[in-house]
Length: 212
Ligand SMILES: [Zn+2]
Ligand SMILES: [Zn+2]
Image (tube, rainbow, N blue to C red):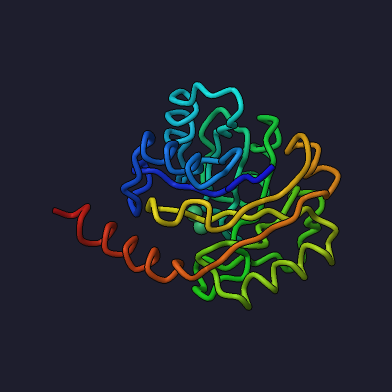
């Protein structure tokens, strides 16, 4: 199976992706499933999963929550999770039966980098995003080392905000995703060649387009 576990929609202010476009392209690029995670909102995830009628394609309602220690992805959540304290966010994701994934922990931008010093990560996280298509080679490599050192599963996600980014990074596994993550049987692959273009467009969308 190949899943892209980090895609935004127009419900994020830095993205213009529509649910129907997203779904169509995700299938066209050969994905078997996706996690749709908007910033601090499950709106996009709910919208895309309702739209999906294909039993052979999984849409995981998800969220990307801002915390004081970095961005945390909550996969399989059904309610919004309030941004704020990392520990509370992780507990709320778990309380909803979700999977907690640290997103792009070593991104260059300080505000988006994680601070996990002194945290017993195994208690609060199920996985680490080890290939984010908007993160540098070095940032992703550091994430792989971190996941291995802490015995956490690895996920791959494009962090798509635009259609051309969908599927640029993937999580590869056999069978069921939840089991694969719990048993640390996932692999990642990806390319970050479109990452910079995507990031620049997001900046433009948020700061210019949305202000008109
Ligand atoms: Zn993020
Ligand atoms: Zn994101």
